[in-house]
Each structure stands twice: as structure tokens, then as C-alpha cells.
Amino acid sequence: DVSYSFNTFSLPTSTLAFMDTRITQFLGHVDTFTQRIANLHTDHWENPSPCEGWTAKEVLDHVIDTQRDVFGKRGLELGPHPDGTPQEAWAAHTAALRSATNDEETLLATHDSFFGPTTLADTLLSFYCFDLIIHAWDIHQATGNDLKLTSAELDLLETCIRSWGEVLYQEGICKPPVEVPDDADRQTRILALTGRRR
Image 1 (tube, rainbow, N blue to C red):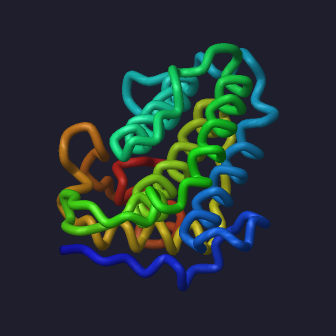
Image 2 (spheres, rainbow, N blue to C red):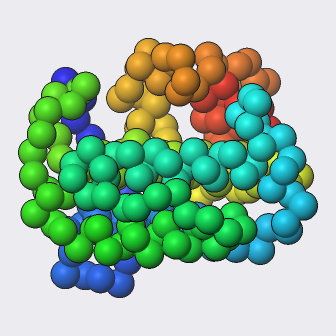
């Protein structure tokens, strides 16, 4: 059974202070992801990403689809995969996402998961924040930019990696760790634990 203590991090939060902290922290990561993809050039979305076989656009589609899936499994349907440019699709998705997060009763209800009893709010604050951080980096790499992650984001990635153990390396999640130089910086070392090279 894995427990998480993400509320100790200084993560970006929504201004909706009346919401559960876990939900506002997740929405803060959504806002950060939005800012990070806002100005990417149309041509860059077809570039290959660090996720083998996926373009930058396909990484974004993955983020949208996995979020739609986890909400749908708890009875919060976000509708069909949105159309339009990548930024338009993400904007439509996040509008539906924000509407769904108003249903705190569902987000805070306990249910069984792979790791034992949990809530959708806890799942969003762990795996889906991890996804937003790591895939923002993937998308920027596809454009030729090396996105610098914050210390708090690296804290979250490191805690998730440590908590999940070998589960992280199951098929379809992350590749095995890669070697890095002894003097590699913290971001390089943490990314390497997800099978990524800077």
C-alpha cells in the first residue's frame, strides 16, 4: 500500500481557495501545463518526442485521453476528445475538466485502486500531476527546447518515482532508468529514472 504526502510541497495552486487543496494543486499544474504549451508553433506539434513513436501532438492527446478516462471511470464524463488545433483541443478539455472538479463529493469519495483505497483527488495529485510535468518536458523537447522544471516539480517527480517502485517500469508507463554522468544535475538524474535523456 502506497501513501502520498504531496500537500507538503509548495506546488502552484488555483485561486479557488474554497476547494480541497488536492484539487486546487492539480488545477495549478493544469494551468502551468497550459502556459507551457500556449505559444508552441503549429509545425512543432508533428515533431517526434522523447516518448518513442509519439509526436508532440500525440503526447498531448495522451494527456487528454488519460484524464478523460480517469474522470469517466468515476462517473464524471468529460465528453468526446476535443477537435481543433492542439491548443484549442487542450482549452476545450480543460474547460470540461474544471467543470467536473466542481463535483467534490465524487472527487473525494474513497474507492479501491491498484495501490489500495484512494480518492480521485489523491490520484490527480499524484499520477496525473506527474504526467502533466513529465509530458510538458516531452513536448518541449520535441520543439528543441529544454524545459527547466521547478524544485517543487522535481520533488513531486522524485517522490512518485520512489513511491511507485517497479510499477513505474511496467509496459506502457516508463522505460528503465538510463545512466547519467556522476556530475549530472538533479533534473537530469530524475529524468533518467524515467528512461529519459536531456
